[in-house]
Each structure stands twice: as structure tokens, then as C-alpha cells.
Image (cartoon, rainbow, N blue to C red):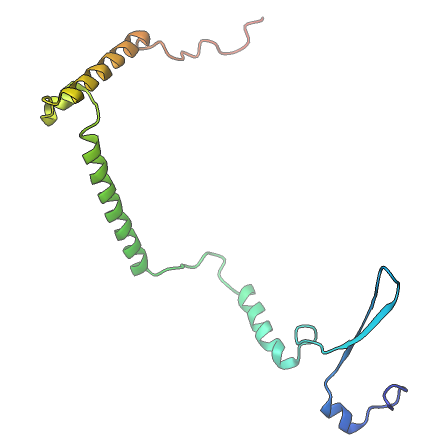
Length: 154
């Protein structure tokens, strides 16, 4: 072949064949060279026509606003907020229904008209006793008075 000898390629060969790359690798165990000819992909050698979209893409990333653009429309946001509000309302109703049968202060039982339920009254009485015991053990103003500030060694 005239191309292997360094001569100019024939005019018919250049039009019919695309450019080929020669990849030379060495086997680390044996030391043998492995020579292969491969077709270059367009990312290795982009043509002038394929760089235009790449240039446009780079230009779009460089010349953009410095603030975050919205990712959803106002109607989508309103729909999401409405769905979340409905879900919160349903969860609150369930929590209120469950709280009716939980022990609480006896005054609250009387206010809600639940003073006839013996188990609930007993649990509420225990709750009241525990609260009174805690209040006696922790009188008002006995908390952190910040009197232990600083170093008292001098």
C-alpha cells in the first residue's frame, strides 16, 4: 500500500475510508505489544457541525441568570399546597378522635362530658396525682438560677 510507505493517499481511498486510529497497548504480564486499529468516535474528534450544539450548550450554561429559576408553575404549587392542607386536616381529625380517649386532666374530662368513663377517670386521677407530685418536688423558681457561673477558685 502506498500509504504505508509514507506516500500521499490516493484520491479514491480518502473518500471511501474514514480515519482510523491505531491503539497500542502492552500486556503487563508478558510485555507483548497489542496493536489494534479502531474507529474514532465523534467525542474524540468532533466535526465542525457537531461542535455547534456543544458550543450552544456551553453558552447556555455560561449566560444564565444567577438566581434559581422556578421548577414548577404557580398552579402546580397551589395544587400541592391544597393537597397537603387536606392531608393535614385529616390527620388532625384522626388525632383529635384518638385524643378523646386518652387520659387528661379531670377538668378537661368534665368539660368534654366524659366523666362517666371509669377507666378514663382513674387514668386521669393518676395523671393529676403525678402532676401534683412533680409540682411539689419542683417548686416554682427552683430551676437553673445561673448561680454556678464562673470559676470560684479565686
